[in-house]
Image 1 (cartoon, rainbow, N blue to C red):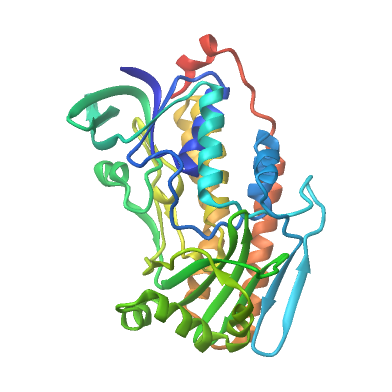
Image 2 (image 1 turned 135 degrees about the horizontal axis):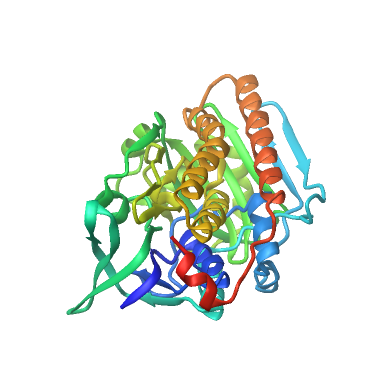
Amino acid sequence: MKADVVIVGARCAGAATALLLTRAGARVVVLDRSRYGTDTTSTHALMRGAVLQLHRWGVLPAIVEQGTPAVTATTFSYSHEDVTIPIEPKYGVDALYAPRRTLLDGLLSAVAVESGAEVVYGVTVDGLLTGTGGRVRGVTASAGARRHDIEADLVIGADGLYSTVARRVGAAPIVTGTHAAGTLYSYWSGLPEGAYHWIFRPQGSVGAIPTNGGTCVFVSIPASRFRQEVRGDSVVAYRRLLREVCPEFADRLEGATQIEDVRGFGGHPGFIKQSTGPGWALVGDAGYFKDPATAHGITDALRDAELLARAAIAGTTGAMQQFEATRLDLSRRLFDVTDEIASFPGDEAHLQSLHRDFSREMTREVRALAALEPLSCPSPSSSARHVA
């Protein structure tokens, strides 16, 4: 098989990249080891930049139609005060949303297929094909007992935190984080929340995120402590930590119903890796991961999917280098602030300053996305051969 682009991973980063490339006329094959519609660990929350992109791509209406509640404010609760910030209409965005990943990833994948991508589930990519000078020219994959070689002009790793593509190409870290938080979370019904609610205490944080499948309630503590505290029964640890970090919020849960099992993430230091090379690129957590403390991961993924797709469509080395430079410029301060927030600073005045700094960087990010010209979509016959 020969394609213009092979994308490894059909989650939001890979599916969004496929959607944009196929709309530009490229022949795209997406391979994912999981099954269609499966869930994954996520903070769910979309920030303004992500909502703006989904709106422009024509995907947002389906997210709303599936019962994803509109989030009209964000509340930051500190030990001695609450700060509520309304979501002001701007750039065509008048609310935020937090779709479950079964909805978001599945929808982006389905729209990519409608646009012409070939998305295949249950396939494990275990190697790369290389040519002259070590240039990547495709992937090796297995589905059951059958093996496949798929050649492509560009291989994109969108295969998550432990990316096979990143490992195989030896993607070097540009920035590495220091801190990490461990998180337990579940979903609740009967918990009225019209806002993203972030609660910060010196010993940890608690949050509530309204989704189309119940309100996601999480508790986070330093990763070093997480490994000691979460042993055996995660349900018991979840309830105990919620009450330890914020007893007032734990009391609110007495009138609500937990509707799914407790899930956990033990934490991982963040990184920004080199994300382009001869015949390959990385997007999503494969190339850039930061602690979930700021719930900005999906927004990162969708932003970089568009920036990478534009560079690939341009089809030049310079365009790919510009993708790297723009991604780093928009990410570096967000990364550094998140890493510091994940250290659980005890000085709340400093913590509030970090949140304001993060908000300013998100505003800069949205301005950059809003300034992008609409993607041109030439006919498949003329554009496919120009995707580098």
